[in-house]
Image (cartoon, rainbow over all chains, first blue to last red):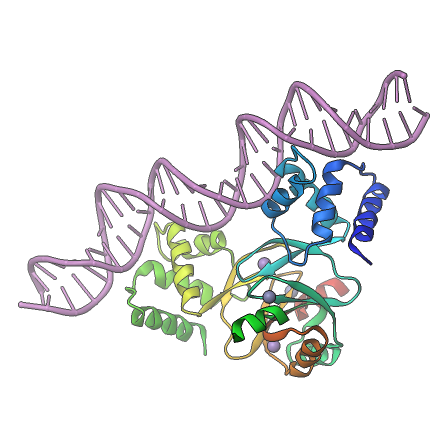
Length: 147
Length: 147
DNA sequence: CTCCTTATTGATAATGATTTTCATTATCAA
DNA sequence: TTGATAATGAAAATCATTATCAATAAGGAG
Ligand SMILES: [Mn+2]
Ligand SMILES: [Mn+2]
Ligand SMILES: [Zn+2]
Ligand SMILES: [Zn+2]
């Protein structure tokens, strides 16, 4: 699904949820849907403002809240902070993040059930959910650090 | 290693680092070292204050900063917030957290290198680090939800 | 053990990100 | 086109975390 399509999907999902379609929300969705990296509210505000003059930072926070509530967007946790947002995973996916440029990409989650059973057996825990995130260098940043 | 031993280790490591041994720090370390769950600064303050009258919240923040810097304590990220701290992992371990009571336990990290190579191959990313965390129910909370 | 340097402490004020309030404006169903 | 009301942005309020600073205590030198 390409970026404009994602934006459209988000706006429609918001409409179903009873939220109105506004210029502010469209701008915010467009920017976030086409972002290659997870963005923090202030960045998203600065970028979205270029498409929607007069946009307020509060509206960015409020829009993110709705998108997250609908499961369309997810908060990204990183060593440097946990206030960045990115398009949510589709199905069982996890994030791979470049520690140099911040580029984020989803990959299909592997079956870790054997590991989970092992853990469950050893510790008496019933595993229900898991967080997995990889950090490293994207192709571009690998080349950059080589030269 | 039992809790008093952990406390001692922490205080000694801090001493090597050039930090003085004080009643406030001892109290904070004792509480955190013996905690079964990750604790947030305010909780840690409330508990530690019982062992060190007059303790200030600021000192909790400052002590956590040092312990984290020395790699003895780690911040724990959870859906509900990212301001809790717990004894750091020893070697390659990951956390298993009970979503009902918060109980946290480390388990030995499995070898996921095959998965990482797979990801690297498909996405051109060079994997350098990973975060894995499991959520579920501890034994006690499983029983509680059954009854 | 005593003294002295200086790290540590807690009270207090400052900061900065996120939320709330509220009067004005815009959406969209009828 | 109209009207009920959701959405907006400016401004104020919150709240966790940090910075200041004068008083105190740790611990090495003598
Ligand atoms: Mn986090
Ligand atoms: Mn691992
Ligand atoms: Zn990169
Ligand atoms: Zn539990």
